[in-house]
Image (cartoon, rainbow, N blue to C red; front, side, top):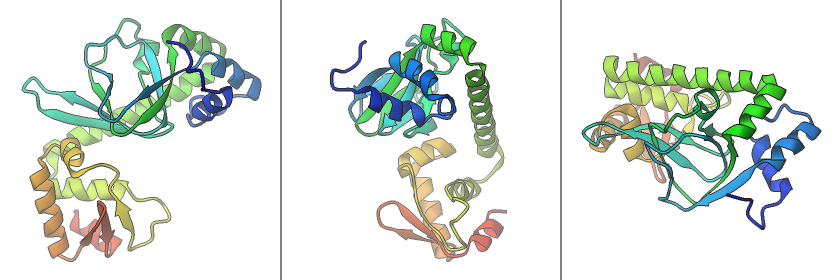
Length: 234
């Protein structure tokens, strides 16, 4: 797969600089990495990869959004994560050659992706060891998030899981009465939290009836009082 004819080195650089594993490099080192980048365009609803496909490429989201999910033996879908610009997947290709994907990755909107093959990545890891450390840090963060997600499904009520998710959507400057725009649909939220869309809707309506939140148009939620929400979730 070669570079798209209209794709410039500048755009590759923009893509790669979004990613913490590369954006610390000097310009001349960045130029080398840019030189081996390839690109892929996928439309909304198209698959980036499927479970069982060979896992030998690092994918970086440049523009768009991709949902990564797994399927149980019964066909039930479990959302793993949402990839936004600057996020990456396929890192196991670096540390475990010969692996296949265990998950599915589907474009949620038209998406542009930068990618690197395994051979190029291994070369960069030898030359720039700090890349390995940053990848390991990201993998550790994902493992921690996955363990938290699993523990919540088994130990917390759906309502508590929803509140925890809302809190995770906040940034440090949100204030005490923030408005949150859900980053995923209620269907995906249900999949991520291990429940059903109907239960999500019912629990959100209950929180609204309790005057803890207000449901707004366009998938947005107003938190009346952050301190009250924290207490309600305990």
